[in-house]
Image (cartoon, rainbow, N blue to C red; front, side, top):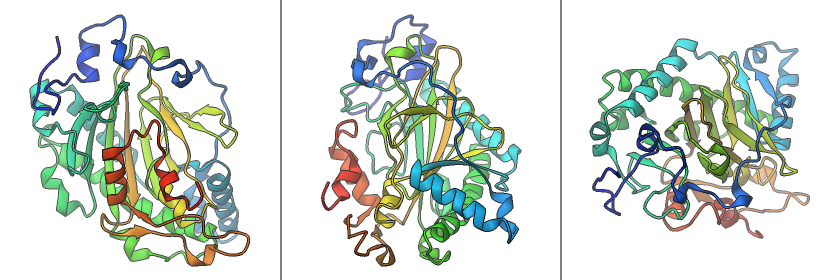
Amino acid sequence: MDKKSSSPNNSFTSAMTLTEEGLTCIPKRYILPPSLRPNGTLPNTCLPIVDLSLLQYPLLRPQIIQQLHLACKELGFFQVVNHGIPLSVMKDALDNANEFFDLPYEEKMHLLSSNVHDPVRYSTSLNDVKDKVYFWRDFLKHYANPISNWIDLWPSNPTCYKEKMGNYTKAIQKLQEELMEVIFESLELNPKYLHEDIAEGSQVIAVNCYPTCPEPDLALGLPPHTDYSLISIILQNHQGLQIMDRNEKWYSVPVIEGGLIVLVGDHMEVLSNGRYKGVVHRATVNSEKKRLSIASLHSLALGKKVRPVPALVDEQHTLSYKEGGFSDFLDFISGEDIVKVKYIDKLKINP
């Protein structure tokens, strides 16, 4: 039986609820058209891993900058290790995420919202009010930078959520500022370019829960998409994230202990005038274990616009993108189906 809430369609069923009901078949609304279904086991491949501790050595730094440049240019993806965030901080964040999704249904309902402009919201799928096909995911999203502006709105249950997720969020914000300097350097820009805007920029934490699914070959946790962000930094507890290369071939992203995933987003594509393109990715589900991920999406502040860097516009690279911002993206997803329409296409001068 569906559990009801004050959701605009007057009915809300979380993916966790369906799993707890012990279904052997997924409801029809979750079954994807054949063209969107995941295609079984993917071959293992060597995806780029960047050791950030090597940046401190002057002789090695140019090699790491070049490695990062190639990863951003060719894939829009890399993993980072030795990034300075303790394993205990990462584990605490995942543990508290797990505790939140395991709470009784009624404990989460006050956060339920389908309004993409809300700074804190709990929901399921992408937008359960208007999704034509549902995705096997529950999520909690909340704004996070500056943390003092938002943390009082975060969940108070689990009791340690604000503390543990706050510690992780602050560490990720600091890492993002460091990564942006390295990425700017890889574009032959001043590492301190937009320094204050990056430090004061938006940070959205998307805590995702992908419960066990009885028919994982028919469903997805998230459809193929790019993030709106400059960069997104992802922590996952089990394998399930897949990325698409420039030849439209899918790869599974392995879980590396202590590693964090970095994805190039649409706003970086705009800022770099197409030098670095957003990576298409999706979330798969499985029948054996619940998967959690914590994505931290970074861009400029809510009211600020990202535009191509003038130094990256020349005869070989003519101006290819219009300016866009986080608030524009929110307006876009409130009115568009991101499965069918790409946000980045709205920003291209000649899509």
